[in-house]
Image 1: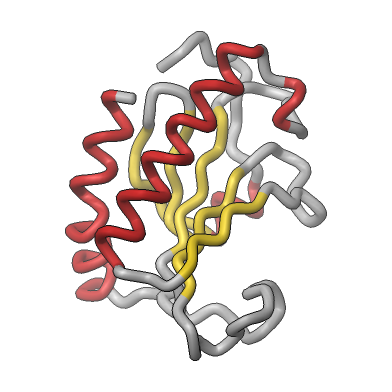
Image 2: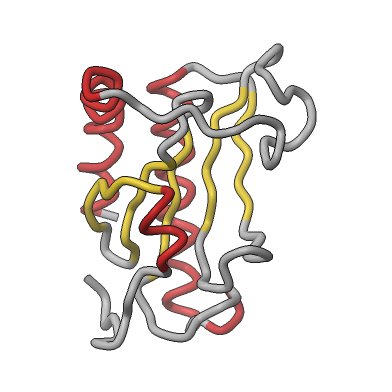
Length: 144
């Protein structure tokens, strides 16, 4: 990982709502525990960072590279119609970047996914399947 601060700690809400998928060069990679949409979150592993502009130029470039690689890999793995990428932070102030594969006709299409319906958690078999689908892109993120 790239000079992460030793005080980095994942926000409790992100820890509760997501499943660890490992680490990239810059970020902790988390799967939203909602099987309605393929939804992965990148969390730059730096303490006290709320906004992308608070990262150094080098860190910002690494984040966009990792985000782009993740987006491309998720679209290839899941064949979506649109990739939504967002850094909202209204509920969780810690900087995190959502990557959500969208499909025309999904439960929230064409609107945002937030608040549309309660999350539908993965069971063990579904979790294993989505992890297998994501494995190629996750291995690429380690090399970005």
